[in-house]
Image (cartoon, rainbow, N blue to C red):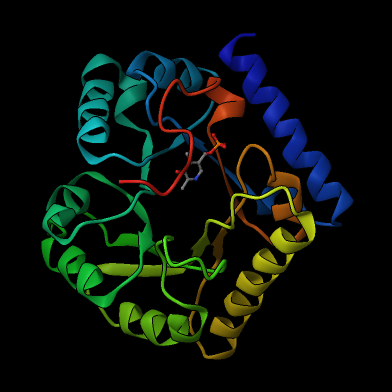
Length: 239
Ligand SMILES: *Cc1c(COP(=O)(O)O)cnc(C)c1O
């Protein structure tokens, strides 16, 4: 299958899921997760119309962003989202190279990103990552502390709080997955009740984007369905 065909099939899945959930397809953005895949694959998908790309590993991402911009006009106009775990000594290149960050889970990281955002760039769009599964191994702020962290992030001058992100448990238990996604949706709605202006709920991947859209996702992060199986690092949320 070509990149264009994979993109079309994924867009059709999103449309069908929106229809089933009585939602407008324009409400759900597709983020193409290109980690482990080369810049050629990114540019092929970009040529088919995809604009937003997500990356987990900083050095790989910075190399790819630079190469994409060097290799084509199209590659200069892509939108890049950082979706991996963030170490505090790695915030500067994230602040310099990305348009969005989905994985802010503590205030210290947010403060550093704001301080290090270059003055000539617009504010960095930020999602607070919530640990909805309760697994200690997972990144993310606890649901109980999510509101306070969002309020603090919203105050920072060079960040724009856009919403929440979650990576639910890696499980086949659909009922459990739905509970975790609905918990994140409830938190998302409660931000608006606390006068925070947010518009983005990032949840759902190749295997569960339909469920995520049914649970209120506005941004699905899709890797495998667009690029194929990754040869290494099968689970998300690793450094
Ligand atoms: C790798 C990754 C994805 C994409 O997962 P697929 O199952 O390949 O679609 C989505 N989100 C995060 C945070 C990831 O690390």
